[in-house]
Image (cartoon, rainbow, N blue to C red; front, side, top):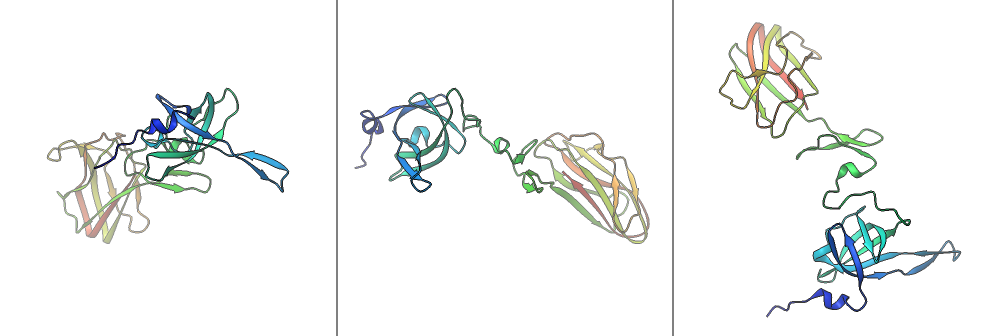
Length: 242
């Protein structure tokens, strides 16, 4: 038979009130002193033991009030069977609070070395030498032996999408390809142009294409349409940078 434990029984005699946002409960505050700097300095390491069900989700930077004093969470770990957790704390100056918001809304943008705009599921970060920033996510399609009338789907927008650049390159003998990039909610329509239609002849570094009608809403198909072909074209590659 499973035993049901009431954590408040263990906290009611020595516990003090702790609060995080709208959540309150009891916790046992521990403030051991430690000698450092060859015994010249005494430092205090603050921690509180409390119910995991109420405070186990607190993460680094979250504000926590213990017995009327403001602290900031440093680390949170489970104790034994996980009924209780131990949270190590940084004591804050009087009348100040942690810069992090409620831990349930704390995110990467709260970190000093992260610069994120328009975060969306599936995004990735790269380090630019001073901070972490959004990584560009290229989308690309290669059409072998393109002919007029080809209509090739590139991808589907899960979220509203802004394209930073579009570039195209062709391969072959005196090749030229005129194309358009379209988007629409329904793939079986004429669609809307997202570029100024371009004739591409570049076979080396590729040609930049002007982008219009930004951003493209979520739930849209994006495809490329071939409207003109000249010379002997082996392939056309179109790359879109998000």
